[in-house]
Image (tube, rainbow, N blue to C red; front, side):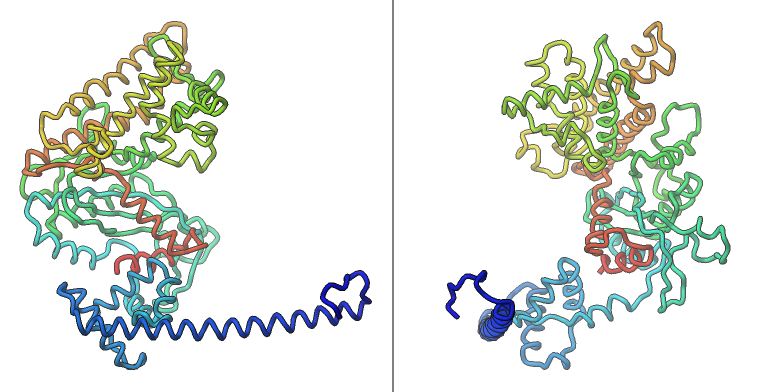
Length: 535
């Protein structure tokens, strides 16, 4: 049959025969392509492997790990895969690579370009110890060894804690014979009320060095959203382990602005102070030292943005200060004008102003809204009606920069002096935070309370939420005192971002990435992933 014969001219049987012939031809072509590909891959892999082996022979590396790595490669090229006994450092390196990308690891291993341990070998090592909930003794042993080699000024650490949402499910662990997934795995019985004890979250404690490279998860606990009375003993147990067992010095505690965390800090109230921002560290053996409570700054900024986003006539907030309203419609109007006229005066997009549940959680979007660039455009083009909104945005932009310095050279790259490290007790940023910034909110609150003709409920709508205001006061006072204390005790500089919760958020992100498509692990999966992340 001619290839150009119209299909409409063929009978049903002729069409069936044509489809069968086409499928047969397609199978033959796929077989030929696969055979050619396999042959080319094997040739390239052999050539690269032989070239790599000869390069190792001619130019041995000087670095200790590189030398070990190439020695292992030489042994692996000479040995059969089943007879190879890998060095422990190569096992740890293989676990690290597989964690980064299991598919890429297997592709490199199968290509023959590099010799790497088999997946089953790595699995035997990662599962040799059955992980358990609670504080991890092996972590404290490692921290103790690390602390012995650190000078006194590098032993200061921040204690972080937060919860991660997990799947409420029970799993039978055949290795330990336990049912995993309850909030209290030691005591449980089968009854109708037991479902209320199945964990929905995992509480994690992490320690981060202020001026060192310490960054470790020290314990985790299945929970159903912890309460303040549950957090209190766990929190101080963590401090005791770090201070007494490991020889570290806990200077700050950072958490988000959740209600249990705020109640936890209020439990440390001694006198009549309106805001509790520090407590005496009873486990400090070298001197009388305080532990300072800090609310995570990115969470604070998001909360302030959320307060402003609700400010509108008839909304849950209707912010007012200095006889002017602070409204979300000001941000919306600026964004719509820019988008309609293609001005691009700011970074605002529809995603910034028309918030969804996912965009509400984005720190980046919140920071770009509450920025000095948005404030300058409001002042320059929209006149007095947006002046108070612009004033608040400028203060919040500087507040975030003052508490978000990440590196020694960031201020030079970004041309923002407020993100520079703190090196002096007389740093002008302390004056800004304690006086200009905090006093702005204090005067705002006083102006609202003095406004006649409104009930207290109506006045409350004119000010940010009091939980947010309390978090701002606590964070600023704790940060200033903690930073000054560290500078007085021989630290050459302090990076303000060391007090944030970013390492813990990154830790949770790694757990979700390990689950690939299943980014909501069970308690059982969380335990094994936590052990894998420690390798």
